[in-house]
Length: 113
Length: 113
Image 1 (cartoon, rainbow over the protein chains, first blue to last red):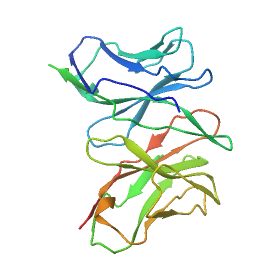
Image 2 (image 1 turned 135 degrees about the vertical axis):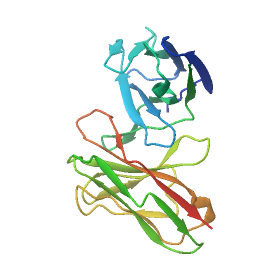
Image 3 (image 1 turned 30 degrees about the horizontal axis):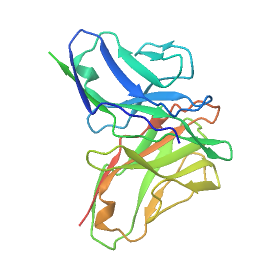
Image 4 (image 1 turned 90 degrees about the horizontal axis):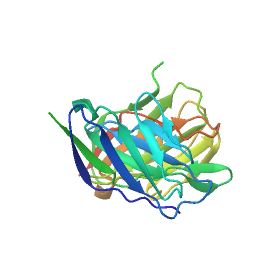
């Protein structure tokens, strides 16, 4: 299974871009990278996912390196409400056409006023 | 459109008691799953289901039973609660069209004394 490595915590000034790194050096060619976040004790919230190309949506941008061994989630203008734990996940095939998402410990992002 | 609804939000049990955590979704999602989250940890998959009548084990299934009699509901049963099952439980659902965009409930905080 492809594993991910994330820094345990990061700070970001309000209004600045937050760049959250993730290493997934054992990722296979057909495995997707997903990002979720969990605000305080709420249920996790989907942010974005990608395979090879960079992706952007209304919440964030996902930059995947050409060798796919690492990726960066970018929150372009962080606000206090973006303070959360961010999970980088590689989709794992569990057989019979089913895939699972394995959540690690993530990165605790603190947005500072 | 309520999304994923979990009940109860809080529960205190004594060791050996049984109870059922309820999960319902109104998005007609085939896939449903249960995770537990312990302090400072990521989420761990307990059981999942890819459709009515089909269930399978996740990473930490021991001590938990599930069934899926309808598309909407996926209850989690603790037959004989143990202190090690003190945790926050999250239910999640998604479509089975290939995307892993999971929708999570707000969680059930369970304490077993």
